[in-house]
Image 1: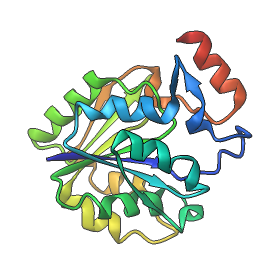
Image 2: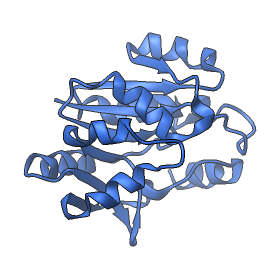
Image 3: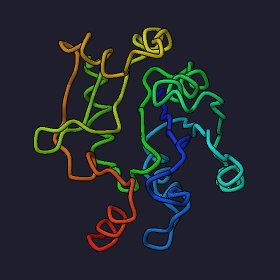
Length: 190
């Protein structure tokens, strides 16, 4: 069973407003992210943090499970750990970003295939730069859950480099939607 933890806990400070509620091609950004994963994974959970009341009604309407990370200010590791706790029954889990509205389903399929033949970590790469979502095998869950505040998920990836597979992906894998300008550029491209 493959799951996905979608991180949606941040404050959107540089955007100036809740970016996951912004519409792209007629759908909220968070809906696009969820749609990208729905057909590819068996279970998913969205991790909320800052001001969760904006997203809870949407997630409830979509029938998506969510968890609130009260320690969201500690960063991505604490949010991934909060989501991973809710998906412990999965054999592999994607770490996905809530502000990546155009995750390619073909990549998700290829990542799952790579995991099925032995990869412990699978990442997309675009022009030499690694991105998200990253797929982790369950054998790494305890190691991820044991990470301390001063450690990073990339530390786990580096420790398992011999079992890390990268798959060529599109620009979407490294696109960072943190500012009004980055959102404007994305809207012009799509």
